[in-house]
Amino acid sequence: MKTNILKLDGKKGKSIDIPLVFSEELRPDLIRRAFHAVRSRRYQPKGADPLAGFRTTATGWGTGGGMSRIPRTKAGPKRKGRSAKGRRYRSKGRWFPAAGRGAIIPGTVGGRQAHPPKSCKILIKKINTKELGKAMRSAIASTAVPELVKGRGHSIGDITLPLVVDDKFMSLEKTKGVKETLSTIGLSTELERTSKRSIRAGIGKLRGRKYRTKTGPLIVVPSSEEKQPILKAARNVPGVTAVSVNELDMDMLAPGSHAGRLTIWTESAIKDLQRRFA
Image 1 (cartoon, rainbow, N blue to C red):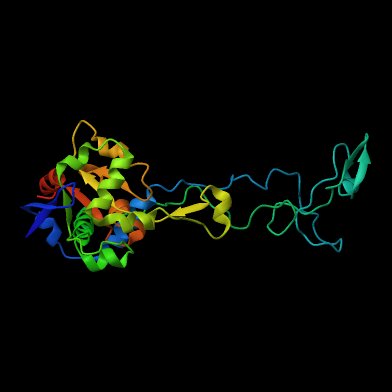
Image 2: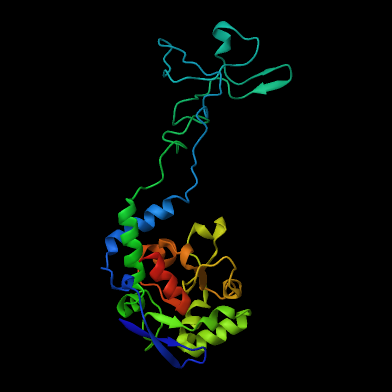
């Protein structure tokens, strides 16, 4: 299977063989499982204090008094016997309004939570190594299927997939140059789509994620000790992500567990991909 390399001016260049990984069977079920397994490792454990709601003097009053047997807070210091049960009272200039109030059990004011989140809960979802590898190969192969790419909402026009560009693309150092090159190769409509921000619906606006940005193209460069200039130049383009071959994961190839992200490969990245998935 061959594909043509696009030059920076949008013209077609020489043709190269693409790796066999692009011929992998499409497995949306495995991609979904692998995505959630990778994403689950980012979850931060949270839970209530095990002693929350128990730091109180409350004890049950027993039976026979015509009162329910829920634990109730004691009246205060230096009050013993029956007077220790008391109600709101004043002692040494201080008021003790919580005397006799229910505590500890759920459903009472100041009581513990019924089923609090526990920090010991296992959040990580496991997946077999071979299944994860097959899911990665399937996600890479899905980037060459026009129906899946368009189904995700990308505007690709009549661009041939997989989209491979010349290695000169990696030497771009300015964000302006990255935008101009993407527009030249036929992705101007895609850049317009990802440049629009929308305000998130719901309470998420108050939690540090007010705006939503659409997912745009993924730029893949070869792995090397020296970072390519394009990795820094493409950071400020809305929706665009630039990574090396070794940094590819399911969250980038299939955002939201939906395969078919528009991916721009450099010529060297294709060769590096062949080495990694030989």
